[in-house]
Image (cartoon, rainbow, N blue to C red; front, side):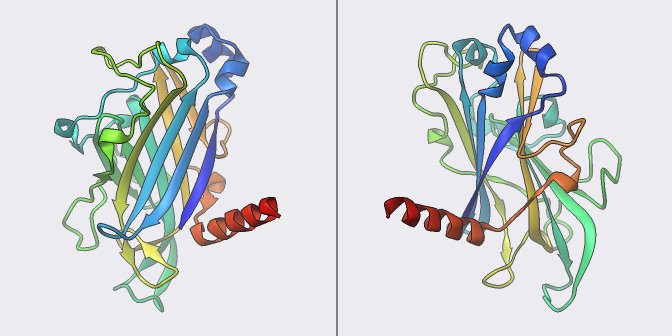
Length: 258
């Protein structure tokens, strides 16, 4: 069960960003960011998020802040959004004692941050940007005590072979295509064959997004942007429906084969 999201760049400051980076606006629009959200059963039930980034020019590759993944880096770290950051916002309905008959709608949501180098953070909000404290409160598992963690998947192979990282943690400019990738998982509880939950909250909408830093310039990517860009605005989030997405993909494939 998988759902694919094609992210687009925020355009409010795209002209200034292009000038700062020494490229055209069309070049920035050509950056491809794709996120695959998949329900995985093994080794334990989790939501797997794979982020794929393709840069159109060597100039951008040389400026991208994309640090090397290292086991020693893995651990909870705040303020990752101040660097290149892979993010996902998740919301749904709260579950009391995992009883599907007792579901009450609320505005609680989860924010997941992951650095390409292995650091991560998971936060929980009661409503839009509330609590407003920085850093936000950590997401706890259903027992209310244990901090939630992510699990990195195939980290040794999540950087496309055509991209090399040099000692300064910048991508090499000597190979094409200019692609990089990271995959990690968020643990889930299974409530039924159709429902999945993170810390007593069923998943209904998600908003996978990415911040890429090129030197001092940050570019923001999401499936749909608020104006000005605001990843927390759930009016722009996508419904999480991997089974329907998979059915649509299969239907399209059959039609093409015919």
